[in-house]
Figure (cartoon, one colour):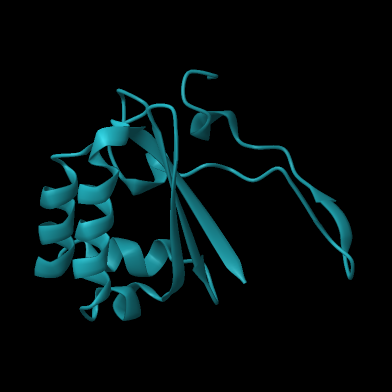
Length: 123
């Protein structure tokens, strides 16, 4: 299972609107095109966390989908509610959190050093 965590800013009052945008989008072919098998949205204070689970890394398919009208529609609708965490945001990878520790009973602890370019101001 591959997981991607997207971090942005959101007013908590907009959570219902954001959920509706995804409910509408998830009823289309877009999740299948990207390879999404599960999506979970979280809010914490004024932060938005979007956990995408898939059988493999979604990044290549996400970049392909950026030219699809369904992607453009969801992106435009989300723009009403979601703003980048990092003001230098240019593309989806700029909003993706970088894992540095995971654990499973089968594999035990797995660690890595996050690349500083993905850590928003820690350059």
